Image (tube, rainbow, N blue to C red; front, side, top):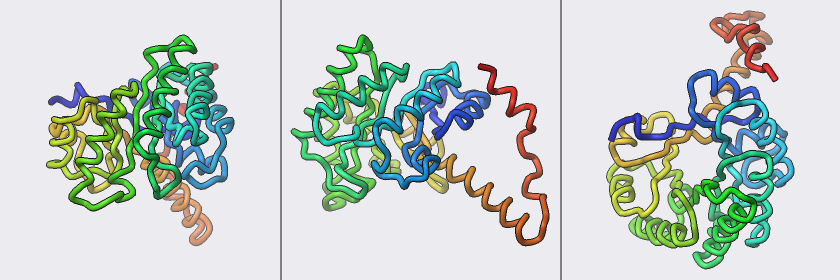
Length: 262
């Protein structure tokens, strides 16, 4: 599989980061719930409201001329009606897809299969009723991310969930925490849905993930972490030695300012 057949999504957390990612050549923008939450002064893990996430997504949609898909966490409520309300709100502001995870909270446990398939069906029906039947629902399962169950059974559990999520109307399966290339290859070969993996420093490269069969690759909070790390390093240098070398090779003010043309 070539890299050209894989959708690579550097994740944005606000309008400015989305504009920078678009200028770097991205073909679509995905958000990171962690990055958005941090920018709003909250921790990750479903600690912001639906309204806060929709407002953040609206600013991104209004800032870039690219399709935007949003990390909608667990849908901002446990019931199918909660997930449907989230999807309707996202369609209304011009978002083309969402991630919906099967964790009941950060760290788990997971919704049982019947509960989460009902939530995904509600999302599919809400998108169709809102006039966007092609809305992309990326079903995220946290079996590997939160080490749910015995290690030997995690792939089978993921495949069981993937099949059920496909039947419920999901368009993709996202399995953060799974970076073992052999397991990924098996998942990609047996999954009825295209597989999304989350790349991390020190993990498999885009090419390696693509060769395993992954069709969509995102970075989660990776870019936000890098940006905040650069900020801390520059602040520490300024406050300790008074130096400014950490700011060398920064994007030019005029180049950044020109990104905001609306």
